Length: 146
Image (cartoon, rainbow, N blue to C red):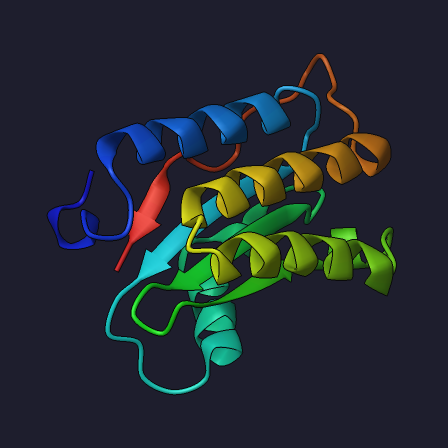
């Protein structure tokens, strides 16, 4: 747990999020990351795109990474998917994910929203990018902090 984020998520919350990522990725070759950002300047979506690149999420073989980027101080988020996912899902997919996050964030249930969004992303990735026997975990299953 990163000490600068203990007012946003607890150690238990972090464990719940990591468990959700592992569960979601257990059924797909897709990669899901959660990034918590503090003191973000500027547009949340633009910062998320930069973070997506910085975390190496464009380097998966099938270009099937999804990032949930959260600006903790602004209580805003962006969900970014790589080109492989955009080629397979429609706008409704992204709307469902953001609706889940909006619902729970509006009630200050941040961890619940993140976990629900991760699991929903996992369901969709499973449909379009099912787990393969030769699958390797291409990105760390950890929460990144900045």
